[in-house]
Image 1 (cartoon, rainbow, N blue to C red):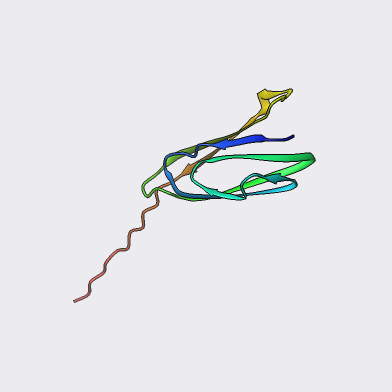
Image 2 (image 1 turned 45 degrees about the vertical axis):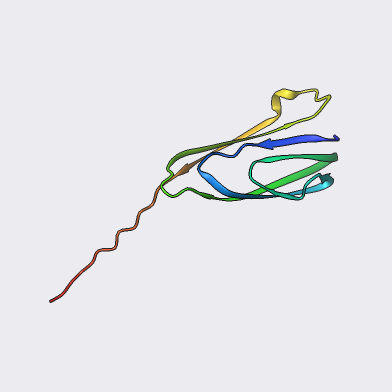
Length: 103
C-alpha cells in the first residue's frame, strides 16, 4: 500500500502528546510528531507500522477514556475494517496522609 493515511484525534483529557512512527517493511512519512496523529505510510506486503503515543492524562480525569484510530487508502477493497478503538478506565487517585500529633 502506498500513501495510507493514519489519523487519530486524541481524547481531550490527554495533553502534551508526542508520538513516534516505526515501520517494518515500509516507510513512515513522519517518524515523529506532536498532538493529534495525521501521517501517511507506505507498506510492503506483510509490513507493519507501530505508532507509539505519549501524553499526560489531566488531573482529576476519571471514567472511561475512549480512543479510535483510523487508516484509509485509495483502492481499499474493504474500508469497513479501517479503525481500531481502545477503552481504558481512568481513576482519580487521591492519597490521604493522616497527621498524628502527640503532646
